[in-house]
Every structure is written in structure tokens, then in C-alpha cells.
Image (cartoon, rainbow, N blue to C red; front, top):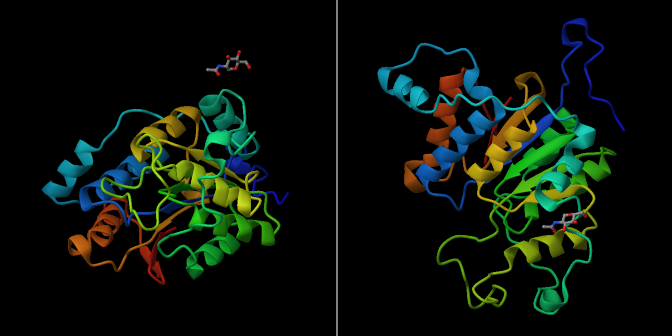
Length: 274
Ligand SMILES: *[C@@H]1O[C@H](CO)[C@@H](O)[C@H](O)[C@H]1NC(C)=O
């Protein structure tokens, strides 16, 4: 395992540095939700406490409104990331055990992936650059990006845990008679299809998931010590050039960057804050 621990540096002696990527998927969210997720993420990952540049009153109000008091727990070491989630979310038992259950086995599609920019060059560029031990993906849908990242980390010989956050419900009205799975008692079975897609590429050891809404999951992660120090983390996402909502994603990213004094890098259709 390649060590990314900087604990040998004197001024970092007592800090555990964990290189992390945070991938954001915004496409299926409306503008307010995109804002909310970005701000929740800022809160959960502890960025909001970054020194404040000079701001307009409106920006100060926004920052004040999002000035969460909660402190995340002290960082969980990368080697414990997977087990922490297994214990906290799955009562210590891997959700991949005995998957798929009999009642869905024959209902899943052999191979069904759909994503948005899931194979952009940004993934390989950032994974090569950061060599992350942990990747947190907000918005995983059917796992196209997550499985792509798992394959990249494997190719590069990294031992990376990828945490996928999604409620696995698509969105209201998502159900598509032509392409989707059959609904089972109102359940679109997106979680099971996601899991099958992960198993298909033999990535169940490197991918774990939190089947909750982004806000709920991120508060959990914060409570359990999934903090990111800026020196070791990179935040990126897609849809920087998507023109719906009058470039809602771009405006949310730019606002976040401005509020926290960061520069936005562009990589294809993706934005990167590093
Ligand atoms: C959680 O695991 C414990 C120990 O294996 C078991 O006794 C308990 O029934 C489990 N709880 C649930 C909700 O499955």
C-alpha cells in the first residue's frame, strides 16, 4: 500500500492526513439542491471554517446562514474507513454478502449503466495526481463513475475505498417503462442494480455505499470522523458548463470557491477545487 501519510513532517506529526477525492454528481439535482449539497458538503468536510475573504452583505448572510456549529469527530484513519461504515450502517455485516437475494436475482439487468460524464479524463488525472486513499462520491446512481474510479485505482495499484452516497431512488417520475427495471412494490431497485454493476467489475471490496440522501449521509460521515483537511483533499464535480438553471452548478461552485478563497480549475466538463 502506498503511504500518503505525512506524519513524518514535524508540523504534521500529530495529524492524520488522508488524501481524499470528493466527486459530486449534480445533474439530476435542481439548482437549490445543488447549492444545498455543496454547502452541506462544506459543512460536513469542515471547509466552511476557512478564513473569510471580504464579502458582500448577501454573501455574508449566506455564509452566516450556513455557519454550522457542529464539529466533525476526529479523523478516522483510512485503514478503518470501510469497517467504520460496515459497523455504523450495516451492523457489522457486509451488504455484499449473499448478494443478490433470491427475490431480485432474475429481475436485475445483466449490465445496465447510465451516467453523466462518468468517463471524463478528470478521474484519471486526479487519481494519478492525488493517489487518494478515500474517495467520497455524492450522487452515484448506477455506479458508472464509481466503477470507473475503482478500475483506475486498481490499475494504478492503489488501495482506495470509494464511498458512494445516493438514495438510489433516481428522482420523482424517474421510472421509465422502456429501460428501467420492473418496480417491486414501488421500489425501482436502483440500489440492487448499482450493487450488481459493482459486482460485475469485481469492485465490491473497494466500493462501499451509504444508501441515504446526501444531507443525511454527510452528517453521518461528519459524526464518524470523515473530515478532509484541505491540504490533502480535492473536490470536483461535473456539469460546470451545463446551461440548465442558468448555469446553476457553475454559479454554486463559483460561489463556494469565492466564499472560501479557492480557485476553480476546469478539466473537460468538470470543475476542480484543489
Ligand atoms: C446486529 O448484529 C448482532 C450481532 O451479530 C445481532 O445479534 C443483531 O440481531 C443484529 N441486528 C440487526 C438489526 O440485524
